[in-house]
Each structure stands twice: as C-alpha cells, then as structure tokens.
Length: 249
Ligand code: BEZ
Figure 1 (cartoon, helix red, strand yellow):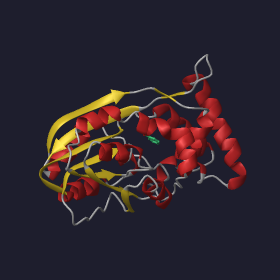
Figure 2: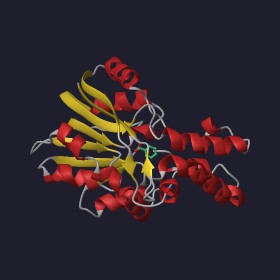
Figure 3: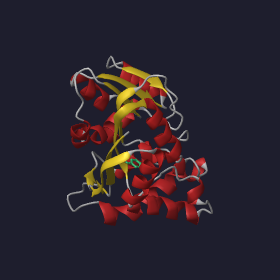
C-alpha cells in the first residue's frame, strides 16, 4: 500500500470496518478448503484472514503496514510485513486471496507476476478491489481541491482503478486463465461522516497540502461532496465500484 498513508488500526476499525464486513461474497469465490495453504495479500487487520483460517485452511497474511500486521497477529494469525508488488516468497500456495488492496499498488504487472510465482500449478488468484469509476466523486473533489492550490493531483494520487478488460488482459498476459471478472457498482454507506473516510484513506492528498491549509482543504472537499453523497437522512454513501475476479494458474 501507499507509503504516504499511515494505517492506524483503531481509526481503521471505526471508519472502515465495512471493508472486511462486505468481503463475504469474495470469500465465497475463494471457497477455502480445509488443509489448503492460502496467502492473504494485503491482509490489513486480519478480519478476513481469520475467516479463511476458520474454514480450516492454513493461511498466511502479508501487509505493508507494521501496525496492521500487529493487529492481525493479535488475532493469532501468521502475518508478516511485505510489499505486494515484490512478493518473492519461497512457499507455494493453493490460492492467493486479496480484498481492497490492489488499488493501492500502481505496479500491477509486478503484483500479478509475484502472485503467479507464489501459486502452485492450478492455484487460484481471487480478488476484489476498486475498479474503473471507483469513488469518482470523492476523487474528483480531492483533485479539484489540490488543483486550486496549484498542486498536480496526479502526482500524489495513489490509486489504480482498472476496467475489467484492462485487468483481464494483464492477468492473461501473465499466464492466468480468467474464470470470472466483473465490475460491480456498490454504493456503500459509511459508518459516520466523510471526514472519517478522508482521515483514513485520503492522506496522500491531505499531506501534499501545507499543514496550515489542511483543515480548509478537507472542509472544502466535504462541502463539495455533501450534495452528492449525503442523503436526506444525513447518512453518507460512498460511490464504490468493485472489480471482482477469479483467475487460475
Ligand atoms: C476501495 O476500497 O475501493 C478504496 C478505499 C479507499 C481508497 C480508495 C479505494
């Protein structure tokens, strides 16, 4: 994940627990079997990793955040710090699973090549992340706020949201057979105010603004988004679009 983001397990749990709560359909795609060896790439605080383990699989997690790996370990999971763009593991897995991580990795060819190397023959790669159009409104508001301040937003934008066609091409070029790939619009109710989401996920943008300007930048982004994403009941709905896939080596 982006080095310009600090992951705080407490804030993540308060503002982003829905990320793992909404992972059930992906777990069904994975179909973990007892005794299988599975890698959870970008395991975060281990909420879904623990569910894979509960299905009887032997699961290892890898995450770039030390704080998140510590949170995972406190669940009794085997997790280590590592870069998904440079996996380089000796072990070979029956499956590699990944949820809500790949959009932070802007070298997707390296990710796919590393996953290929990590899989046994016929091993499966099952994942979900932000696809084309994901959080477009939020991204536009962040870009507009930086543009106004003379900062090129693309120089700090940490996200990769490919179309299914683009990602399928990448997978096939690496040798995978793509069983399934789909773009799924999934408007998602946030647990609180958009401030919480921005605090956890928009750090590369906020950190590019001078400290004295940050508060007004975030207030402006919120004001821009309020008529677009906040319902009459006061609840915030983020414009998520998922790209879900299953590919086989
Ligand atoms: C996502 O899960 O799609 C996502 C979350 C935070 C920032 C960008 C994308």
